[in-house]
Image 1: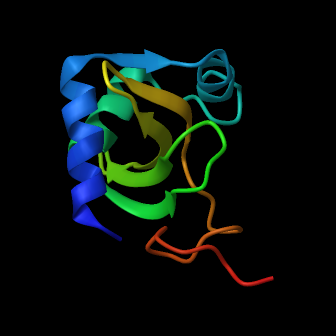
Image 2 (image 1 turned 135 degrees about the vertical axis):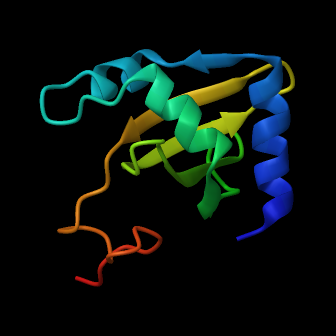
Length: 107
């Protein structure tokens, strides 16, 4: 995946980070429980694994990063001019992702 888009993500992140209502609901659901700090850790250590250039809400991507505790976290986010929008965040499941969490399992 293009590293240049990750630089756009980090540039927007350094300005401000905003979480959508959907992100908070997903992050704090009983089966997910991903904290804001874990999202930040994942973004700072992450790489783009899926690029959604044609997203109708604006160019977005899926970032895979690991927390300091080595927990894998997926963050769907969209860099905007003044902030980084976090759309959702979750710990990827081996049921849906290959073991490195960079590609979806084939159906």
